[in-house]
Image (cartoon, rainbow, N blue to C red):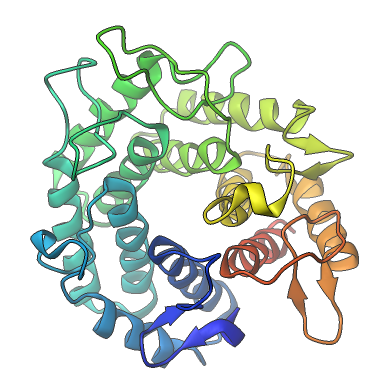
Length: 331
């Protein structure tokens, strides 16, 4: 993954058409999680360089004023979660304060006009109640609460987010999460793709809710979703997590990162549940990717973990970093 890092911009693969700004936020998150879990801080200078450069106001959304406040709530939240992890790594409150600032920015787009609440995805268009923005916000606000437990506002917002999400209809009859709600007065499940990361980020948020409250019903719901993924013939093919698109080209520019995000959050759930029931699944996927999707000479990975290697993108590299960390933690 660091092979694709650019010191000048602080981004990963800035000139690769298969990348996007939010994916560098995920790469920073993955890198920081690696440093936390491994104890190896060799890449801390690059992480700090990224923050210093990329926290400037965005050229395409100067209205945000910088500190990763973007034109969509999900893009902002990816970077905010990376800031929380960077704070956990360094104990430097500068990064925690950025995450706090980002949470306030995102919360401005809690919509009370339609769908009885929920976050809007597009800040520019003030539109679309989607799954990922609301899931990311749940994990972000609950991580902030668990770091700053005296701030009950975060807990209140997290509980409200979960209650809204749970009753929104985005969790379908198969216990899988579709992309969002219809953009009309009905506000019902739109039936769009059950991307793997939509099944994953919610797991992290529910674990944080359990940590805050001690209520294991949150873990029960998380396990229902995780189990639904594992038995899904669309999302798991011959035991290997698979994105529901036919090829890497159909998943670009975003979908190549999704599977690793799911695995990162599944590992978080796995550690919270007695008996670590998902360890075998995590480890088998890591072994499959290492054997089938990896170019041994370069240690680069393709999009499909079943192989063969297809193309080099930051999404596929950060995805496998998150997978390998998850498998390492499963033991």
